[in-house]
Image (cartoon, rainbow, N blue to C red; front, side, top):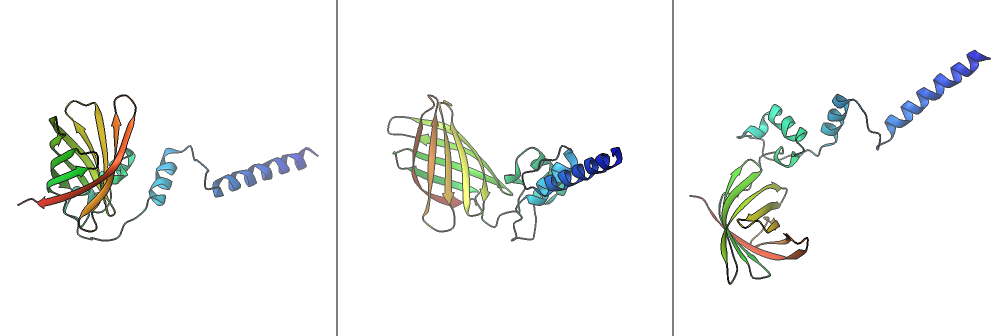
Length: 182
């Protein structure tokens, strides 16, 4: 009788383990398996096959993924973003940025101007598909501009959210133009 109960218990454990692993929400506790599953489920982009930057290096790609920064680990985009950008916000602000590009990573600095104030600003972001996504921080650090620009056709258009220091938000639309670097 003990043998039958023992056999039923073992079979029950095996069926439970098999059922849990076929569940898409199953989370493994083994870090190596977890990393492998993350890598397998990561979207793959096809396109430009000539990798001129370090993002083609598998070790750097894995490091960026492990740092939860997969947006920088994609293929090198075809779009050239480096240059001088003018971004007009629907609330009247104007942002002028000189952006640099390294693979899909974008960074730079410039100014944010309103009718009464102009201040230095710093930007960082990435290209994802047909969008240029930027975060712009003015020097007074009382707000953060999250900007998404559709770069598929001219004139460039997009949306933004301003996160204010008092925890309020402002949203709106943008128009943008770019002069490529020489």
